[in-house]
Every structure is written in C-alpha cells, then in structure tokens.
Image (cartoon, rainbow over all chains, first blue to last red; front, side):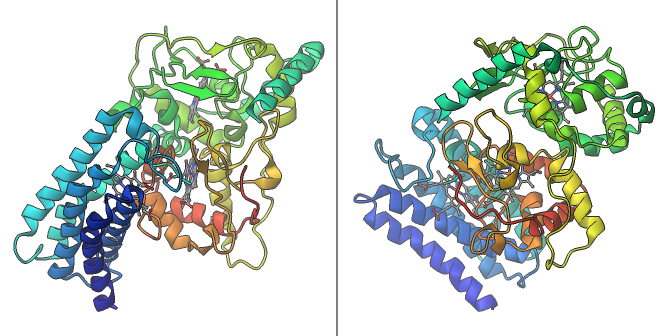
Length: 151
Length: 310
C-alpha cells in the first residue's frame, strides 16, 4: 500500500516534466496535468497527515518536490485564448492577471520554503513534514476561490 | 432564462401590490416572543460561524479577527440588481446595537425590520427561520460583544419593481416556511437519528446550504423537490454541485470524506475547495467535529436528486 502511494507521488512528479514537452501545443492539457500532479501530491501528503499510511521522509520529500516543481511551471500555461472549452480556469485569470500572479507567488514561496526545510533526505518525522507542508496547503484555497470554477 | 425570471418576479411583485393586505409584514407570535431569552455569548459564537454571517456582513476578503467587524458593504450581484450587505455591528447609530432581542428575532425568522419593512431574501432568513429561540438568544448575546463599526453601507441598487419592499410580503407568504425540508432520514441508510437531526438543523437552518445548492424557480423561490440537487452559479460562471447521494457522483463520498472536506477543504481526490464554498468551509472548520459529522450523516441520508442542474 505504502509503496503504491509513493509510486503515485513519484509518478505525479514526473507528470510535471512530461507536461512541459507538450506545452506548446496544448496549454490547457499541460496545466491540467500539472494540477493533477499537485492533487496527487496532496493526496500522498494528506494520507500521511491523517495517518492512513505511515510517514516516510522519502515520500514526504516527493510530495514537497512535486509542489515545488508545479509552483515554478504552472503560471506559464495560461496564454490568451486558452479560456475557451474544457477548462475550469476562471475568466478572472485573464481579467485580473496581477491577482493571479500574486496567488502563484504565494504558492511558489511556500513550496520553496518547504523544499528548503525538507533538506536532502526529506522532513525527518511527521511533525516536521506537517510544519513544512502546512503553509503550501494553505495556498490552494485562496487561488481556487477566485481563479478556478467548478464545472 | 434570467430574463424570464426577472419578468415573472416582477409580475409576482405587482400582484403583491394589488394584494396589499396579503403583503403586510409578519412577526413572531406572543408565545414565540416569550420563549426568547438572551443567551450565552460563548455558545453564540458557534451559532455565528454556523450561520456564516461574516461571509456577507464583514468586508470583502476579510480574514481572522477582521471577520468580526460587521460593518457591511459587500456587494451581492443578483439577476434582480445589486444588494449591499448592511452594517450589523453593535454600533448604536449605524449598526443594530440599539435593537432588542425581539427585533433581532423578527428580522432573522420573519424577514421583518423593527420599523415593519420586509427584508429581501438576499438575507437568507428563509433558512434562518428554522433556528431555535435558544440559538437566536445566544447569537444575539455574542453579536453584542463584537466591535461597533461606524458608517452605514451604501443603499441597494435595484430598479422598479424590485425596489418596492412591500411587495415582498406576498413572496414571503409563498416561500417563507420554517418546517423542515426533509421530514426523516431516507430508509435503508444506517444513521443515528439524533445525529441526523442535528445535521438537518445545521444544513436547513443556520448553515443555509440550500440557498446556494438548490435551484430556484421563476419567482426566486427554492425548488424543494430538488433540495440540494445543485444549481447554476448565481454569477453565471460555472455551477454549484449536487450534494445529494447520487450514485457515481456525490454519493461516492463517505460520511468521513464529507466531514474531512468541511474540516480541511480537500475533496476525496485532494482537489481543493474553491469559489464561494471557501468561506463556508472555513466557517464549518470552526464548529465542533461532532457538528461536521452530523452534517455528513444528514447528507448521506437525504433523497438523491439525479438530474443535472440547468
């Protein structure tokens, strides 16, 4: 079970890399792949925080690294005109670009700090992991509140 | 569709003008008044978060302690025009600091002001009408402890006929009904009746979940047959999800998933909450865990509303 979930986390990290290659052709699919990897990393992190699976520093670092990679690349995939179909990205991204940039910056700052706290081997125990990941989790909602629509 | 809503709502209001007697604002009965007593501010704080008052009456984007500054001013855009949330702080001059508990309870459960005017249902008193007199007394006591904020909010921006408050009397006759929406838990679902009833109270009463998650008819009344079955977003961007136990959709969330979402903002797939639900979730996170479990128990044992919202 733990192995399987760790694998999901690592695969999620890889998705970020794959996404970048197809970016030019399909920014919507790319950014959705990135956010899907963020969701998978959050699932790995949350399951450990809820003690549904045992904590491991490698898995902790994998989740944090995925968030960090995503927070660096995500903002590049919202070109004008990519707000048409098949996207849950809200009009506000294009109407209020400064606000969206500010949310991205908060996400990026929190993820970089978590990455620094994770060190080489990942946060040593669950409490250290919660302390590092907590602020990253805190940035999801405020961006989704204004910039992501449901359906 | 929006146009049709406006036209028909206008007809209702004009009809209301004709039936002047029927549009007389209603108030609490004497027995109800005698049941009211000023309560405990500590308990009232929980009622305050359950009721989500700060989501409309605090400043836009307020966080932390600023949520307790109820100076109003937030603009609520609707097909009928823009409503501006009033100042309900403890200021004597600009807020509701001079109100008695009876004034407060009449506003919350009858949508009637101290000077006998009808309130617009943008103030969700159709849900608050289900609140107990104990909770109203506790909430009143808590609100008296909050800061007095000076300054009145701007007036609503409504065209004729929506600016005629009197007409709302008939609307209230049609749609203001404090009876429970769902009489009993759906049979066959394992559920602790006491817990389910607490969940019903929170969802149908103070939590006013139905005001967003249930679609409205031509006159702006909730379609109770489709209770919590989802609705188009009031702003027109996206839609508000169905939160009834439909198989393959929200029905696949366990009670624990629902309670965790209300606590943390994460769905079972670890998507993060968004839109107007962010405020609601943050309010729910302030309630005792048993209240979130109660809401989950209720949502698991209500009729499933299958059709897609439109």
